Length: 122
Image (cartoon, rainbow, N blue to C red; front, side, top):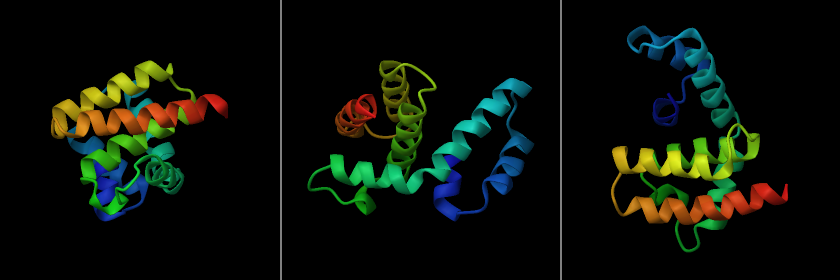
């Protein structure tokens, strides 16, 4: 849902309605997925500032859209405390391995490591 939102900027409600027409999931799964999506979308600007800060010499616009989506989601989760920091990072890296390139994994890991240290201080 976050990737789709990044691409066309429909409202979260529009994205969710469209997504759940074809995706399956228990009601509790849907609620949790919607919560993560809505939180990451609401805090995308803050996440983008952190990504820019922690990715020295790399412009946000140059990141593949899927990598931005993964980072926005993980940074939201790190800040929200929905799961232990190492779990959030591991899950984000698994998403990158599955949906992005092998070169993205260490890059995302570095950004998320810095973001997790920042979240610990908050």
